[in-house]
Length: 465
Image (cartoon, rainbow, N blue to C red):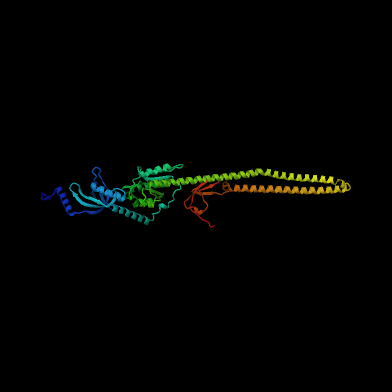
């Protein structure tokens, strides 16, 4: 009962708290479904009880907060339901739909005693946030910005955002180190929480750090181990998704799940289901390039061997030409001598047979014989001249063929083309043949006979064929 003190009615603190307790117990006689954000679970392992901090925010400001009570038995039942529905236990920083009764204790104040929590509501709230984030990004026109960035030919410098003790990060390192043969890929860790209330601010802060020194990196990889839907909630938040979508370097994700893609993965340049898959993707790119390079080197070597063999054949022909000419001339000379010998032999035989018959006409026979011999010599001389002309013509024709072959070989030599003022330009290691193979901003290498020059394409002007 209150007491009178200087004509004032004075209550004790106990009387006030008891009055409040009685009023609340009479007013709130049933249970109610209440939605609120659980800022912190506050579970005590010794007793198994939980005393969650509950709050409500509007426009980023806390407009109401209260403490809850979740007894051990209720916690174990609710936690099992969360694991079954969301593949993740009850944790901090999520929206809850709770069945509560309102209690006031003189010593502990006003609390909400939680008897049940609906995990389906939490899952739906996460999906709602995902849809809202996607709508904002699409409305701003930034949804596909990061995807449009060019993927480096060989991404050798990777900025990794992860937890240093994460299993997913360990798997990423294990695979890349095991498959790195004949090449080198460097990475630098930017540590950050990947779930919970501080995750978004820490990840975006690390992205800002990387952006300031982006010239040192080719890619950014966000790596996280496995987990359920609640743990992925941070990757649906607008602030993080916008930072990834507008980041100046390609962003790759490997956040450890295979279904229900998050907004961060949708806006990232490349999304892998797991850190291991992300590591394999990068290693495959290096190994494919290495294989293609080896094949190109072998083809160049084979082309060089073919050219050397052709050059050797030309040299051998040049060496054989004088011998071939001498051989042909010798053959014609021997033929001529044989014909001359046969002619002399026939003449002598005829002379002996006709000697007696021709004595009477010796003078006439001598004249005829001399005349006949003169004609034969003239014919032989004409044949010899003709033979020489044929040999010389044959030698000149073969010499011309050899000179033409040698000239063609020299013309086919790329170095000769370069010395005559031509140049060859390459993009990503490939010879540029047409203007439409290039894009503005492309990096090209121009090769001259005495060196190379690197340049950037500022504009492209096509000519009509």
